[in-house]
Structures are given as C-alpha cells and as structure tokens.
Length: 88
Image 1: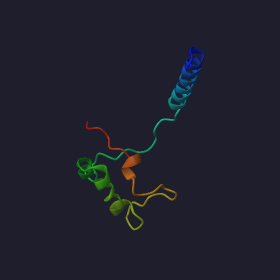
Image 2: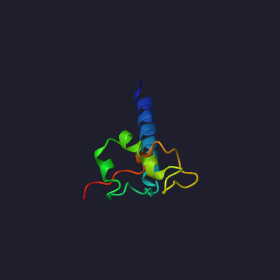
Image 3: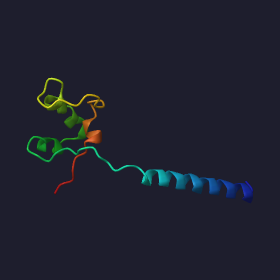
Image 4: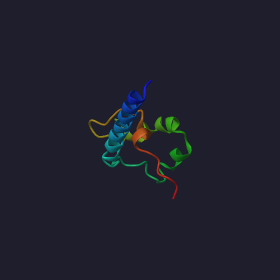
C-alpha cells in the first residue's frame, strides 16, 4: 500500500471515529426508572439478572396489582432497562 492510500484510510478512520463520538455524546440522558432499593426488591439485588427477571411478572404482570403500562416493551428483559442501583 502506498503512502497516499494509507493517509486516505487514516483520515477516513478519524472522520468516522469522530462522527461516532459526536453521535454518542449527543445521546439523550437515560430516563428509565432504576430498580428500587426497597424491601420488595431487595432480594433481587443478590440474584443474577436472568434469575431475578423471572420473578418480575409476579408483581408486575397482567393479573398483578401493579400492571405494566400499555405499549411496554417485552417483559422478559426487565433488568436490561431497569438497572440495579449501586450500593449506597
């Protein structure tokens, strides 16, 4: 590869990287509610994500007293969006 071609590839790489960086920096802040740190959810902080997510529909399912809003995304990946908060 000659020097001119290498320079063009380097410039393209830098421009692409800069574009991706600008795109990521302009992303909106995260607005999804975190997993609460209360007595009802405390047990789930000690479980792996996949295991804890299996219990969410007991309280937040169709028949439960705390149903999910209409149009809510798939219910099997709760902790993908509703992240655990760090320990105080």
